[in-house]
Structures are given as C-alpha cells and as structure tokens.
Length: 206
Image 1 (cartoon, rainbow, N blue to C red):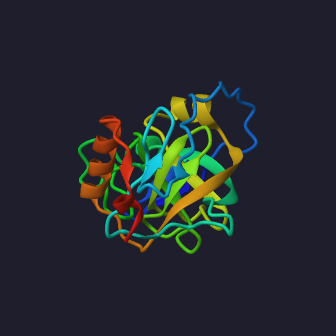
Image 2 (spheres, helix red, strand yellow):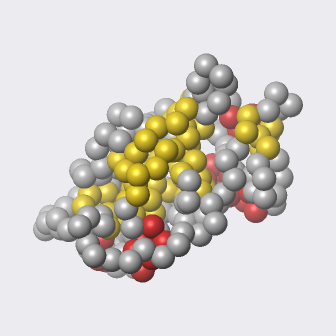
C-alpha cells in the first residue's frame, strides 16, 4: 500500500509502501531513461514492439481496453515515484513485509514494473504503458493515490528524483485487471521479455 512520503505516521499497516511525492520541491530532474516503444495490437496473434516485447496476461487479466479505432485507451494521469526503502515504508531489508505490495507480489523495476494506482480506476493486474517509464502492472495501492494518480516503483530515492520526479502523462491501458496478480505471472512475463520473443495473443486474453 502506498501513501505520501511526506506524511509518515506511526502504526501504519505492514503492507504500507510510502511514495516519494515530489511536490513543490525545487529539484532538478535529469533526463529520464529512453522510453520503451509502445505496443501495437496485431491481428496476427501477437503484439509487435520495437526493440522490446512487453505485455502479458494470465488469470489476473480481464480484457484489452481499446477505443473505437482499435487503439489502446489512453488516460491522462499524474505520475509520481516511490521506493520500498525505510525512507518510504519504515521497513528495512529483513522485515517480513519489506518490498511486498498490496497484491502480494514483490516490488520490481524491470521490463514490466510494479506500480500503485487507485483500484477503482485501475484494478490490480491492470497493465499500463507509461511514456518515459515503460510498462507497469498495478500491484499496489495508497491513501494518497486516488483518481487519476499513479505511483511508479523505483529502487532508490535518487532514481525517483533524477529519473522521474512528478509528471503528467498519458498512459495506455493495455489490459484491465480483475483484482488479482500473481508473482508467477510477473516473473514469467519479464523472462519472456528478456528473451526478446513476440508476445502471444494468449497473453492479451483472459
């Protein structure tokens, strides 16, 4: 569970992850890493992605969200960043709940990373493409993450400030989740991407 980094309170739930919200800080944000190519749905039974193949589905996924033209639905959101560290969660490595998200999977910065969102808008398991960040699957929630706000996982505070900060972006909703996400699926999709293989249509179906 994610909430604002600047409002840490005692007695927070064990699954609480605190976001690093960059609001009103006079910081310099360095250029973000090269963003992943946005996927294009194909009738051939796979998703074609330039340079990398990202996407996937298991029982945690419900359906592909597309507009009338068959393109992935886009939504404008405010995106911030958070970590699993003690500065965000109050937990240190070795704590039984360190790095564990609301969905039960471990936080991850990878080809498909874990992110936090309002599950009323983006249910757990929803797969998004975030320009400048890459692909993220909704695995976490937070008291400060409501409506059109998302929180992106980074491994360090330095990465949050230097690589992201706070941005308004248009995200693509590639899959809408059903409220569940498994560690097995997250591991599987990231291994598939590392292999550089095209994404089978079955990953985009329930």
